[in-house]
Image 1 (cartoon, rainbow, N blue to C red):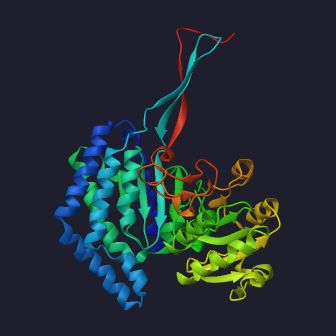
Image 2 (cartoon, helix red, strand yellow):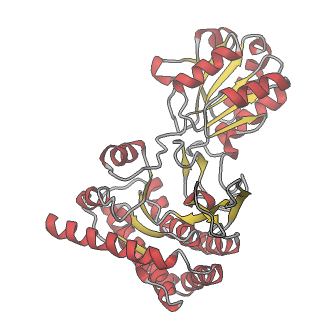
Image 3 (tube, rainbow, N blue to C red):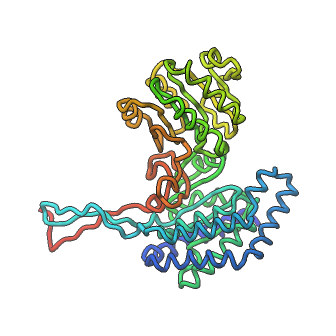
Length: 421
């Protein structure tokens, strides 16, 4: 399709999403929940048709030489479909934030002022590979009263369109506009370029994928973007920490799922505990297959470590590799985190209440933890029920984004004829 035709189609889809978002904002919770539950049942009933569309993507991926890991992410296996179904049912069971009223206060003028949660409006979602994101993102946006425009990766185009079709049929069955959920059907990059300048129709862009994609979106969008470039997460082990606890936390953070954004990437150790901690820590991590890349002081204690290069500090390895540095103080650890962290997740392991409180106050990250694994920075683990992603920006959300983060608040005022003096 020619560039001008792609442009016209994306603009029209954005306008339809804006028009659909207005009545959707007032749809009662039971109706939204029925859409999600209908979608769940339809996914189960139409497994074979969905699998056939997914196989088109998998065959094209194999033809392009995609890695086994990429093909695995692309596959809509029975396990993945069951997970989507379960996710839809869980989102349907969550409390609806739309319409909640908070902080009602009587003012001296006689008016009563409060704040009401309302949908954002239209969300644009740009993501790579995993087609299950189509269902997960749409479910959260719909529950929060938002229309959503989805642009998945070109490698998943048939799968994404099939999944969106299921959602649109469920919307129509409940009398709602199918334009509440749309997948952009073009794989050309021009579709993204056009989407990012539809500021009159779209309220927020959420990119999910590699750092390159997110930087491209942030640099080219006229619409506010919720960013999460990378997850460079650290554990700082304080001088009076419990060694066994520190080892458990680091093993879990680094080994359980090394390829995710809340995995541990850097270990900072106070010099006072380093001689007793590092041998035990290194032995446990090496047994788990982790390569340690240490500073000169770390290597002096554990000579088997690989010498860290300058490029290892602040690197998101997404692998069984861990950068290790001995520091003189908590202040040095916090300076290191400020320089090399990504505002994702930072942990202190300590018995000192004062140091724990100071770390919580002064370290800037979407989640700051005391004596717990970085792996807990997750919407499900935080009790949000589900998340659309983790924001490392501060406007308007910081950390895992659940239903509440897909809404905003407007002021509401009750009066009885009051006028301003």
